[in-house]
Length: 475
Ligand code: F6P
Image 1 (cartoon, helix red, strand yellow):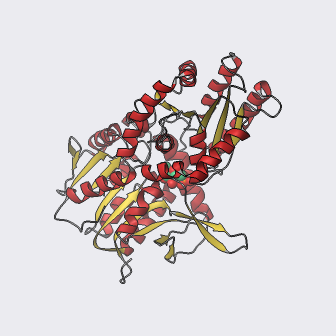
Image 2 (cartoon, helix red, strand yellow):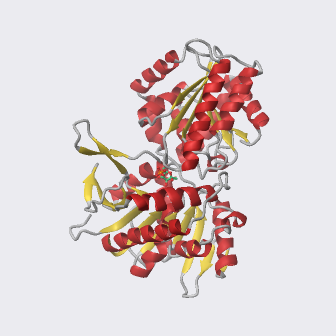
Image 3 (cartoon, rainbow, N blue to C red):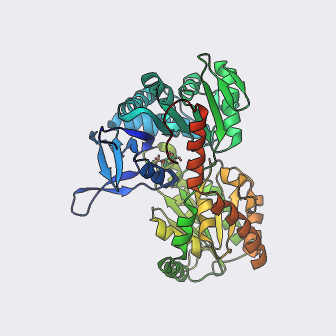
């Protein structure tokens, strides 16, 4: 942050990169928020002395800027009712299921929409206050799709980028949304709109043509006021070298051995790591594994399944129902197929630090990533980055964005249980040469396309949209 209190780069995301926690002595503290968004943007923010605007979690009313982990942070507060309507409601019970192929039924409530507008305006007004003249403001994700237009209205001097971390649905689904036009117009406030995949960018441009009536050509939208907006794909990635370095450390190697020992040293370990979300396909994957055991392909001495499910959005009904379903399924599978001291499924409902996850990735022979729909899925890339030994198999859903890049995974349709069973079995039986061939090719992709390259590309292209407009930032 400059001495004037403003910045040339402002990141706007629903969550701050730190979560408020309570220290053991009861005093307030901060811990880095998990997730790709934070690790992606933190280095860019540091390089540019930027400001991050976001919600610290909880219903605290504090709005004073503060510093944590060397980052300049500006908190946005929400009341309990706003959290319920904007975050749990419109963001996570309307947009989230709608944008993920309606794998759960989206709910449309007018009060939730009103709250979405109010909170988006709050973020836009705060960004307008802290951005320097001609600064770059980079807005993130589905919770804040109205911010670009609101911000442009307040501050036409700014260069505005928007990035959607989740899928953007086809027109046939998007048009269910009663506020579809407002969302499209909100996004069009940006100069550059980034999506995970080019199909999503095309969905967006087509909708703008059909629903808003603007002229478009390839990935460019022409607005009546002469401004242009580009919509293009920028597949996100991870800090690949950072993960590899972690995986190579002695502590992680030791912990990986400990994990294998604790599991009774089965021949093969299957692993799933997800936020506990109904889009992740956890239920079907556990069923497929259990059927392989039931069919006699292996028993608990040969193979176990470790499922780490990070608690998420626990106030939203669909997430509660899912938790109950998974609890019941795990209980049934272990009841049917476990032995004393040897469950078939080891289920951990918890969130772990990066080091611990790197140890799980090193310990696991078969990583199972089976979302019904996923923008990218960074866990698949994290697993690959950690397998510097060129071993380990990845079973990956075709419906994860990552499948576009990780073509050498065992690709599956998560709706096809038999197809998933044969892929799991093939990965289980694959010989060392086959595993190495596939892993080497996937590693080349992940190590060469890391998150720094992603941010660099987005910011460079944002600067190129209107070169005469706004200052450039260092990617
Ligand atoms: O990438 C999707 C996303 O919703 C991010 O915007 C978000 O920070 C992350 O998943 C975790 O979700 P939440 O912030 O709702 O806990």
